[in-house]
Image (cartoon, rainbow, N blue to C red; front, side, top):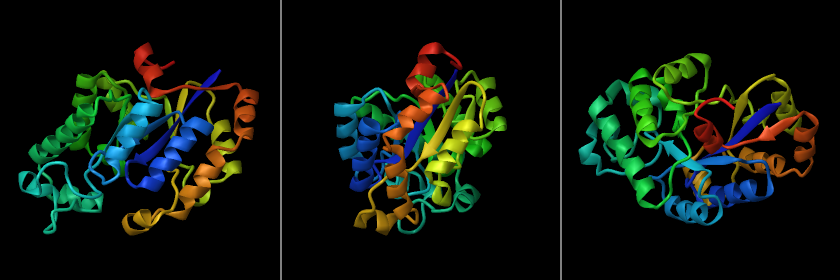
Length: 256
């Protein structure tokens, strides 16, 4: 038997994404989501999560979109002259100090916890924890919170496991853009033969707020359409795949 986590990234980015994530969890196969606590629609996302799926929301740690949770003057190496994060990971990491990264990430965790929610897991916007400096901080946070972490490749997975942090066994980034199709999703489901696979998704409704803040827009609606396709449940059953959540990994203290 194979196990599957379907995570919706960018919860809290815009109201349209919030609405789509809620629909995808309730009506579709989305098992978990990660929330961007520094974005304008974060408070609405927290309220939705608390009401509908309080045990299935993690933190989408973010240093490359919007403004920091802290006053920009407190983390000057992370922001440009306008007080916003650098949009590109490379531009950020050329300037960022370890002190400022840890201060801001801890502030994001604290804001999430103040909502009353308990995180199911951690991941990073734009896979920022591929950088060793960020990975060390994320591992420390995961251990403090007793939560799993997304591992995007075997090297990252080995690093987190060496620190005692739980991760899924496999990860797919392929359900994205032109790859956001029913046929490709089925191919992803066929591509692994053991353990827990996490599929990263980005469902959303393309509202004006999204058009102003993201380059990934209309494909989000296509993702939602596929992820709420009622036939998918039958496909999972036929392939002997069980939907699980990150909290299941946490409970088991290891791969299921």
